[in-house]
Image 1 (cartoon, rainbow, N blue to C red):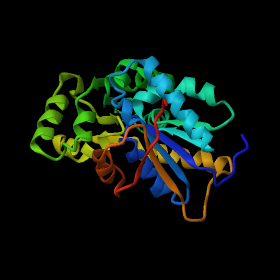
Image 2 (image 1 turned 180 degrees about the vertical axis):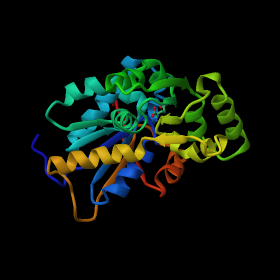
Image 3 (image 1 turned 180 degrees about the horizontal axis):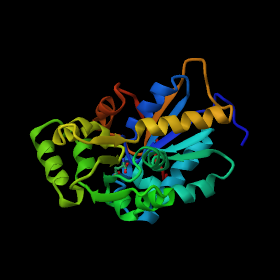
Length: 270
Ligand code: DGL
């Protein structure tokens, strides 16, 4: 791969949830140019088939490669579980691919050996069993109890959090017997950092609640340093594309990215 330091980082998600990862990347790597793609036309991915998510992911990778990205970050657990291996094969030497699952599995393996971990995510992520499989490979005797929580991502996209409805839905899910007696809870969906505070309140801060945004940003930083691709100076350019545009999406970017960003429409299929 022959990329320059100033080549952008490509980041994608089913929608704007992956902006939580983009936000962590921006904080850790403030000089990196960034191209974000939210596939809002096909949201949510969590209920889609593996084949559909793979097809969308390939199309998005084409867009990001055309824009010269040096790394592509799959800022979505559902797409990471359905399409990571395929994308790695597809882009080959054109860009490096980082998913949101491996950095979290590494973190758990280093810090939670012998513990019982709960996990919540979309149906696609939970039913793929990918976290359990990767944790087993790490061989640290971590017991994983996973629960699909499909109402949470649409609820958050609609701006429903920190209110009575979100409290009740979150409490209902977290009271499920599957999540009894856990030492930590993994938020295996990039939308969920927005409800981390409510989840911590539910557990009264008795357990660790872990999201992947920071560990993914760190994994990206390590890769860039190791490969002499870290951009350390200059004012970055950041572009945000969505496959379908509504003002509501644009208004919500403030929640996920801590500032309002201008979304540009870029259809996946013409
Ligand atoms: N942000 C996606 C994830 O991390 C979930 C949202 C969706 O279902 O599209 O899995």
